[in-house]
Image 1: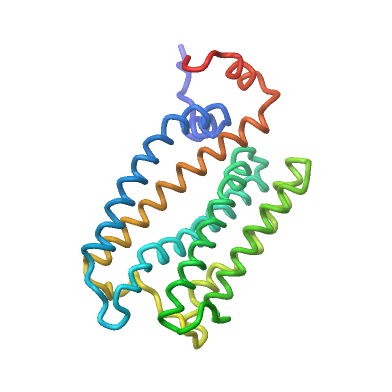
Image 2: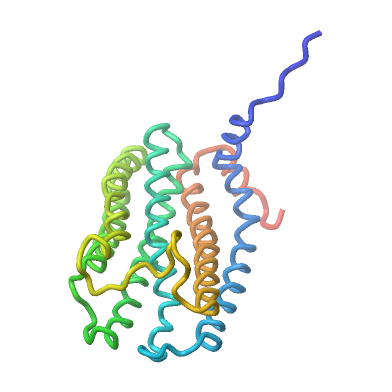
Length: 256
């Protein structure tokens, strides 16, 4: 008597990629991400503002680096992740992938704005001006426009599938800007300093400064998961409003 073979793991993956499975799982994870955000932020800011030494050239004004650099990293990383999910949804007609992309865009735009704003605060005492049309600053500003353009485009089209496809095209074209941001300090003569941390060289800062920066990066990661999952859950309810599982969940008393 032949035995049924176990289902391939790819099928199980697609089961958890279903909107109903994502909604249930993300609801359990979000509180933990908020806890991680709070813990990493408190530790990172304490070390960065009270333990890390004063810079001999910039004094204490350099401490904004502990927010500026992680925010800049997140602005680029989130765009790449957004473009990946948008492309995945476009090529495979995967609903959840497109929802992830939509949920990521506002958070990426927020981190890009924070990177530009903190960069201006840092640039004033360092360069003597709030803004220069430096290659890295300009390409980071273009990244903010790409985020805003993606959000505006996907919100302007009523048809969900057409909006996702149009947004995916814009996201993929805009992805070329990410290596421009990263390598701009090498390709052009700019005022902006080089890479703070390199994968091929030893860190150029004392360990307390590096620790604070990494803790703030973990805090921003955890924050991103918390808010993106929350936003994605709202998008799921919006787009799946006519499905049986959403109707059943909305009829169910809260807390059960």
